[in-house]
Image 1 (cartoon, rainbow, N blue to C red):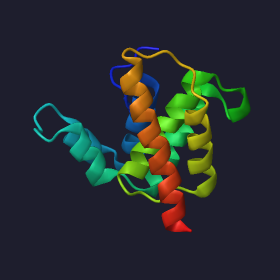
Image 2: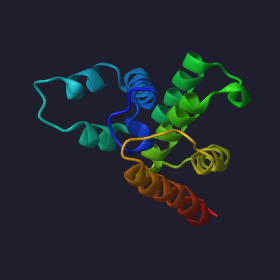
Image 3: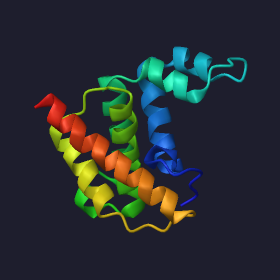
Length: 139
């Protein structure tokens, strides 16, 4: 796994799925926003375009890459799924209870080695809290 940050959605596999979801839903508009000519940071592009459809398409992309049987997924596939869910939750996109709960459970059970591990552990706790808190807010 070639990750480049401590957030779940910063691993390559999650990033690829998010990119696929955004592209599938927004097509040319997403391409234009992601162009090197556009000074808007990626985070702002995601904030502008994320919605329930991009969430669904990004999860579909994870399933296309790793198979539809989520129980058979390895840690990297699970982290990609978690990253997709966390990013959308952070951006205020409504996430179905079953998806949010599954992501929180998988984050709680995460056993991947990170460098630096303490920063990942702190970030992972914040992501779990976000998912649990958003579950309470929607109840």
